[in-house]
Image (cartoon, rainbow, N blue to C red):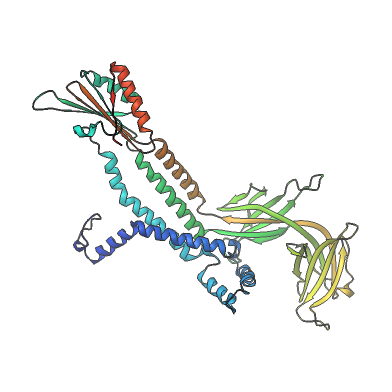
Length: 494
């Protein structure tokens, strides 16, 4: 059985499966491949920003999706190039490729997942070398290391061995971990090496940064693949399912009461919804929601988002039987006026309602009856009239139906979301911030001292985030103050 060791092992030493695995590993750790992945995701993001995108709420609603796609056709169908109308065909092709729902497309989720895997593999590949580099230290350095022509070097002369105690004390007061090594020389006094290390392992905190990136991308992939979002408009007392009808364990929301109190100047002071949530016919949650204070249940968040006018209507058929008693939501617009539509139950007549005001400022509701078959005059309009608040139509003029406007109310609009990646986003943020803070605010410093025959040589190296010249000068001054001697500082060649 062949043992596969990832490293610099030649491909010829591996069996075919091993060679394939090694090739995949090399690809995932390749900087060029990582740049390619990021470039493709960036291009996809730019396309998603330029092209109209179907709202997330319509992705789980076939009727809503068809409606949004029709709007996209309306926007792009007139597009022509060199006199050729390419708009309709382009929309069809882009729709099949998922370019109108890029951030929810399976291929986009795959690319995000692949990037997550690549970052994980790169981290695993580089961590052993990073650990060895940070863990292994060299206490003793050769004399050329202290060459005074290099940065951050200093030398004290005519000191006895007790000066090393002062060096140890200064380093420990500055929170360096001090190590010592004595090297016996065949002829002459021993050479004593001191080594101080500060924040030795903090470079490993870059792993927190990598973890944060991984968690951010994983959260995006999970939310895109398994998240849910929809928008629901409800009049007072109305209910609606959260997911498509027939979904097991589906939730039903009910607008128990919507309120939008006004100030004296006519502006809205607030708008709230007394919202109840039901599952299998049992109320499972209830709360008065407002903007930035949603109801949360079973991973779903119910956000107060908007509101608009709704008109309570009572409709009776030609026999006088009640066929409708409830609100009609004016969630559209016609000539800048609130507009809504409903079909009279049990008939082929639709009611188009438009809210307006008379010259005196009184509300008036324009009521238009629309049929599926053209009338004698060739139009689909069967009747057209207006109602004041509390008024009823004459059945003779409204296709034998009695239409009554009983009350002017309002509907509430809610965004309902399930974001399974939300928890990972917070963990990612915490991990990323932790990694950045520890990396930038706790960089590594290393300090060496070499004592031989009354001569004390000093040197310092530090990460690039450190003002090494300043810190080295402070340490040399502190050693000089304790020993009572003056140091000669290096003069680097330029």
